[in-house]
Image (cartoon, rainbow, N blue to C red; front, side):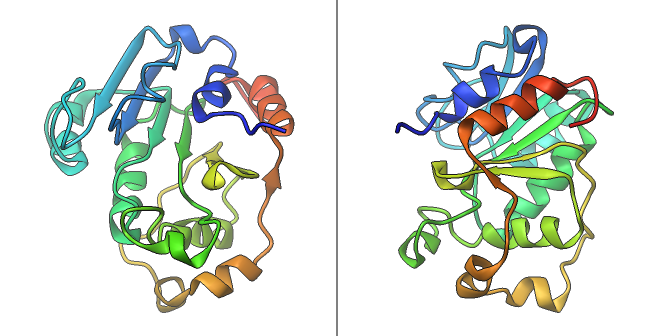
Length: 195
C-alpha cells in the first residue's frame, strides 16, 4: 500500500485553500507546489522560493510579523535547529487553531540519523512526547508528525533529552497512526477545534 505524501496529508485539512501556509525547507518544491493553499510562503537558504534565507533570518526579519494557520518544518534536521524552528514557528502560528507539521522525526534506521537525512531530530519528538504534547505520527513517510496544540519547549533541553540515543528512541512507544487515521483526525479537527 502506498504511503500518502506530505502534501496529500496537508491537503486533507478542511479549507486548506483559504489557510496561510508556511513551509520551512522547501528545497525542490515537491510539497510546496502541491499544497493547495493560495497563500503560501516558502523559506529555503539554498533555493529561491518566497524567501531565500535561513529560517533564523526569516523569523528575525520578514516573518516576524506574519501569522500562519499551517506550518510545515522540513529544514535543518539537527536537534538544536529543529527545536529552534519549532519554537519560532509557534510564535507565528494562529491560535488556537494552528497546526505544525514536522518531517523526518522517525529515521527508519541508524543510517538515516546522519545530517543529510533525518539527523537527530528524533530527539525533539522524544521531548514533545515527554511533555505530553498532543500529536500524531504518520507511520512511514519518515515519521511526519503533526502537533495539534503546540506548546514551546524550554530554551535549553535537559540532560535526558540531549542524551536520547536512536536505540532508546526506537524503543519508545509513539502515537503512530496510518494515513487514513491521520487524515481523519485532521478532518475532524480541521483547524477549528479539538482532535
